[in-house]
Length: 114
Image (tube, rainbow, N blue to C red; front, top):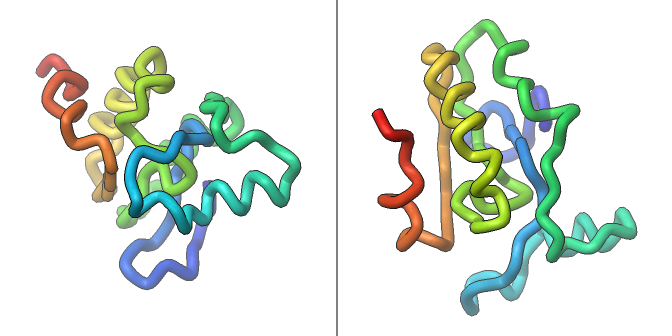
């Protein structure tokens, strides 16, 4: 999503989809929820961001990319898009993708086949 970010531990953010559902006490202060509410959007609806989906291809110099800062990469509602996101990650080896999740139980079953 952002070419640059103020987050100290990353260079850029990439949000191929937006929206999430709270799954733990750690979700109570969710900034994504506040940001989407300010925009008049329902943060509980996960939507594909077509205008952002291929953004990593535009960044030719390697970056540390916080992936899904406005969602969760392993959210069940993104299952239909995740394989395409994995392809983008595989096709842009100059980048380091930082994927944080509150759904670690879904990681194993949603890694790329290879």
